[in-house]
Amino acid sequence: MTLRLNTFTGGSDETAISTANSGGTSGDPFDAVTTTGAGAIAFDDAPVSAGYAARFTTSNSYADEATLTWDLDAGNRVGGRAEFRLSALPQQPDENDPDPHVFIPLLTINLDYYFVQLVVGVNGNLLVMTGGSLYLPFQYEIPINTWMRVEWDITTNGPVDVAVRLFGNRTTSTPVETQSGQDSTYPDLPTTSVAFGQTLYSPLPLATTYWLDNLAVNHTGFPGPYQDVNSADIPVAIGVGVAPPPDFEYHIPVSVGVGVAPVPKLIVASVTIVGPINDSHTPARLPFFDLVAVTEQTDLVAELQYDVDPGFGDPVSLFGTVPGNQTPARVLLRAIEMLEDETWYYARARLVLGDETTDWSSTIVFKVNTEDGDAMIGGTWDVVTDTVPFPHLWFAYPARGKVGDSVDAVGAGFGTTAVAAIGTTDAPSNTLTTVAPTDNAYTADRLIDAISGTVDPGHQRVAFTVPDVPSPGGSLVVKGEWS
Image (tube, rainbow, N blue to C red; front, side):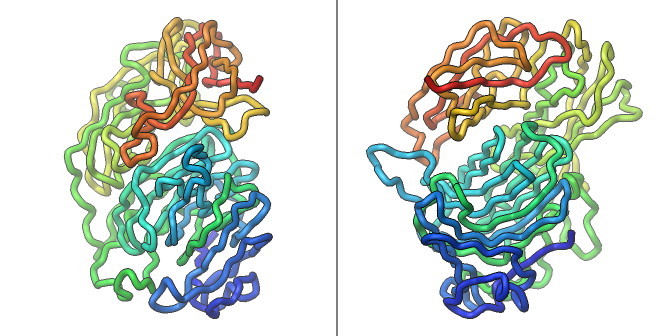
């Protein structure tokens, strides 16, 4: 699918946007424009110096909608961009009884029966929620009455890989924050549509007004900034010599083109493989590789190689985006083919930025052993329940352990009773606790950190003992119920 773009420049001030008037000089018309109840979408010249933006008026009713939708060709990758401007941050309906599910819904990316939704929370931070177990909270506080930009790159040929970048204005190529993660709940899903605005049953939508502009969708990755900006917040013309954003094709860095400004050199950076554990056995024939990167550089890609040859004569390479503004940052990669049982493998990793790389990390060695392997490799989480609303399993702490080790499954919405399991094998010991928010939970210092296990927001933990799991192993599962 070629790039689909809409700049809203062909509209008329205060006119409701429709499928009929959304095309022309604005760009690609929307396949559907839906407004019900108090929801409304109109052209508006107030927040821009020339042309128009799309003004969204949303309600506080689950049953109302205000969406602009593009249908997508079936594929396993969807990238996109949305510039957005908020008139106010979400407000708690009752400060004495705060509700963590108060959001401003910006857009929803639909992947068959799965979705990825971008919303703004009560603290002004961007949140990425999905139809599975993946949840990515940003730390950057979004200012009001300021144009921001968000871009995403989602691949679904296997586990769903989600990477989202937040930018402080319309034109910069350097994000203020990047978050990424992987969800194996529903693999191999086709892309179906992207809906901008408040969709039906958006999570506790808020009655407010905000603007979107220069929307883009593609099947190739991060689009980069729009090159003809009409915002009053920045100059209209883009200066000569401004470099385009880095271009990643399935997270594999490409060469810098002729005449493009050179990619910045790597700052101090290092990467370590913490899983599988060096010189250990694993029962997983499709193991996860758990990397920890220490760097202050953004736009980095982690590369991992594994091979049966200690000299890496014919390695398999995996790539993943390093989350920005996190030190240390965690990258989770999964083998792309079934590894051979009863075989020793060697793995190494490095960080990549354009043509620059760090040195390879120390090589680790591990053996795939489906009979005797006793390591639990983190990264494939799920929640099994039909009764708990908005259940999320955030992470396991520690992320791996042997039979008999104690591990905490950390998340929210588990219910009043919960049991952890590896695949179909229940843990022999389970203790569910509900943890109150800390003093930092509603401040900019809040943390949900899978590496240290620190969690400031209110949450739940299932402390369980790692069971002895028969071949071929399985995912960590939390089975929760209300009673």
